[in-house]
Image (cartoon, rainbow, N blue to C red):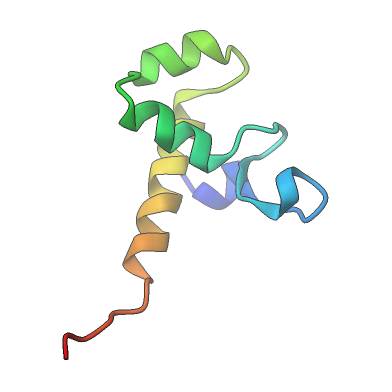
Length: 75
């Protein structure tokens, strides 16, 4: 599974935030719902057009963003 198949950024949709392709569901929304205690199954029930593969792609996208953050060295 490639996250690029499921995640896109378009300046004309949700102000260019990364979204699940073909929706207005942001990666941020998916991560916040999961962080607040929603399960993947809860998300799929609440957003019937969302697939498990898309949720997993959002995880992968978020992990890549964190992995590529600039490291700040302690003084």
